[in-house]
Length: 487
Image 1: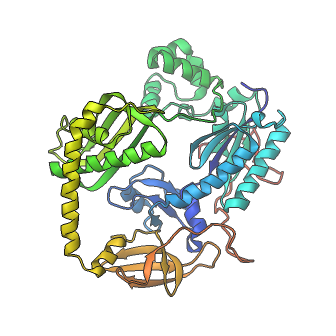
Image 2: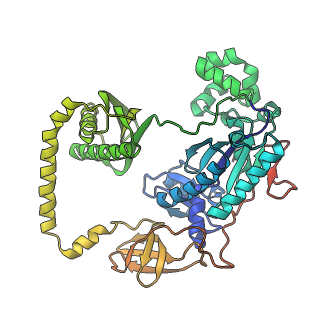
Image 3: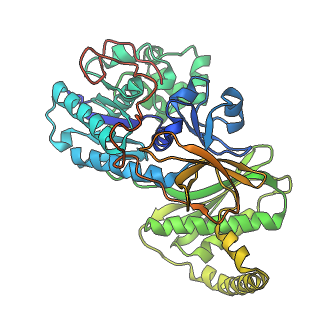
């Protein structure tokens, strides 16, 4: 534990939804839900306006629609989110060489390693300046927590949401954590919380009072001992600049259960190829191939096979994935498939026997695919080819450009029509127009920058909800003496 709150945790506020509101002036101040929009979609992020209605991350989109039917439901635009994330991460790296990204919108920073004085006033000033810099560079807001340990810094940023800053002074940890629910502690999920509840343990203070021996008896040595230390406010985990990935995987959920075995096999092969692409993009190889199958009844099975050595050969990984699929009964219907590779390494040791065994099959598959493609191309007109280049569906939120009206985004589509609102991040709310889905003047576009093009007096993207902690000082800084609650 550090004697000064020099560990910073940044968490962008409702990141995906806030980015969409910043990009689309007509949605500012209104409920926005980003995620899968199909019948089996899941909410990725909900704006604070949508959370008022009970919409939360990881909730089925169908349930969210019942709770908040008037929200804007948008497909994710990861290209935009990554662009914004890169800007934010650059600002964090300017503070310290030790930055530990947890996701696109969340990271720990070791301010001490960046030369910031180990004083509360100094780290608070750095945190406030960071919030201003993020707002200036991206148009979005982030919440900052400062403490002497990673766990406490994350708790502080949760309490600061949205658009605030909270400092936890070293020495106040136990008093602060005591009344909080045990779910506040890292590693306590629903199952662990239920085990503790049955033992009469509901708060962090009760967890500490139970003692290490009792927690070890309930949860096992590693989990019990670790939870006891955290209940005392003790967390000596360092900020690690490079977090080594343990596995690389891809998965897809299908709108309709797959019952055709040939289709299931082809989807596994497609996922294996996508997994290899990610593996190679990361400059890694792996020796254990894993498949994941979720059945129609939500039961989930995983199967794995360890190869002779690490590889990034698509033929080897495809063959292993198909072998694993043969051990799974999919006759009842499959709603999700996934393929992953673990046991990662920075080099490859090709499984030559497996590679030779699959070369002929790969050649035959390639020949058959080329023949099918040639046959399909022979019967396709130039107009059909142009249509094939278009997305088959105009997903809500998709960036588009019209030859006459310029840049806009898809509000919705159906029965051969697509509705587009024409506006930019720095414009006033735009007008809506409807076109035929095959309109040649309409085409997919690229995300526009959220800042930099706004004219004087442009639309504001201020959050609609004020932070939980407001201090007499400018900047909305919270104090330790105030009650910290969950987001």
